[in-house]
Image (cartoon, rainbow, N blue to C red; front, side):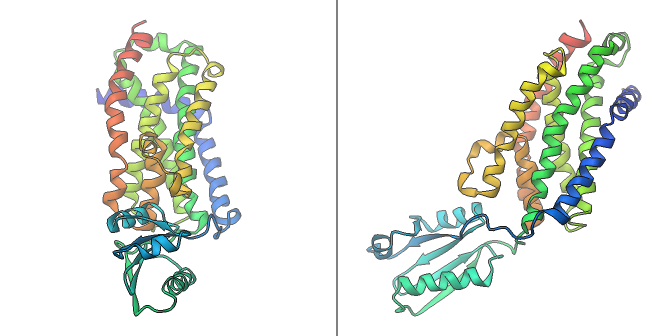
Length: 332
């Protein structure tokens, strides 16, 4: 089986090379490298710092008198909110003291502004304040570097979805699927070959762009795993859908809808207040959030957790793709 798969991979790689997929990947990588390093600004004020407060006083003195803050009714929920919203700073208000809750990368100007807010809340009649930093120290990404996971997702999800469909439609047009049916390669090799080629192109793209933008500051093993799983899932899903269409012109509308859906996690990525749990089920989610976690904190565990849903989706889409490809293409 391995020998047969290698032969099929060799054929599909020639098809990908013939269709200039590798050239497109390299050109896109160069464009993204130039964009991140020389075009996008390092600093971009996305929004003002949000202040989330927990009033622990018995009479809720602050919550009743200062309505301009966002209040959370539980200390743990406040910390949870801060972990989801990197632009926010927390305040735990007590009778005559306060705690400032930070993520770990806030500027001194932001901290000074919070101190001024606390001073105003207590009318300067407070004894002290304490600064608490949540979790391990993390790095605040510059805006151009924060765009890296989004651009990687663009290639892995959007281009990968179209690439594998283009390979299938070319085979339909040239009639090579009919020739493949008489070979002993089988359905599994047919699917694996195309999906692996597509995943390989995504990994090459991701590594080239990251090396020339952030260097070797992240764990490339985990980085590669995230890209591979996401690209594998998208390629499999693209192959599953493309088999039901006769040409790329018919398929393009489905591709556009898919790409719009794949872009939705960007909203939660840049503005955590817009984040909803359904984003976890979109294939671009682990690429954006998993790689972002690697870049900011290097937390391998939380990065890999973003792959739990995609792996479950793989277990669902894999047999569906196998059954339908075998019935509609290989055995026809």
